[in-house]
Image (cartoon, rainbow, N blue to C red):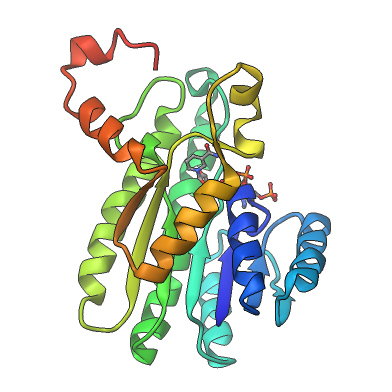
Length: 243
Ligand SMILES: NC(=O)c1ccc[n+]([C@@H]2O[C@H](COP(=O)([O-])OP(=O)(O)OC[C@H]3O[C@@H](n4cnc5c(N)ncnc54)[C@H](OP(=O)(O)O)[C@@H]3O)[C@@H](O)[C@H]2O)c1
């Protein structure tokens, strides 16, 4: 099983990789932080990974992302690409316009470029799963993180259309929507005493959803029902809630 992970230093992605390593997976990992990625690669090898290759980090240049996808698939069939990178700064209403652009680049534009780059070669090979980590924050946007939420909302609509495009090709699209999860991204929430799912639990559900080829999953499952209610709340009530 060959698995490509973009944003492989993410807490959620690392725990997914630990589960796949036990199955003897071959990994191609990409992340900005090379030192951290090397530590993760060594750990995955100890846990049973068959091979771990580190890719040159390239998150924003469409030509480089396409070249990476093409060459990775040309070297042998890829079973899964997990697109996991993301950035959620605090208090987005206090940030400047350059930060808004960066949030959209990291959480929306870049993940779409990776999915687009793999969709063609996967369709030609008539196999592969494109798994994208979205968020419950994309279902309803709130002032604390509305640009981040909007970027995740884009991923939801994008994945819907990509899934439609790939019907009949044998390629699966899986969108994972975690609720608040205990990783580096949510240190501030943990410090504030918020309840968070563990990265292990979210990773288990993510790996399971990918194995089953589920189109969209909320993890933990409860969030499907929470967001169903929140999405249908009238604005005056929604805007009074401390969320
Ligand atoms: N934790 C949550 O509560 C939660 C909830 C819903 C959805 N998610 C989503 O789950 C995914 C994984 O997040 P996580 O919780 O595992 O967080 P995390 O541990 O903080 O990981 C974030 C990942 O994104 C990468 N990244 C951040 N800024 C980047 C940039 N400008 N360019 C390239 N890569 C960048 C990080 O790389 P470096 O190591 O180089 O910084 C790291 O690999 C993200 O898409 C996130 O939005 C998380």
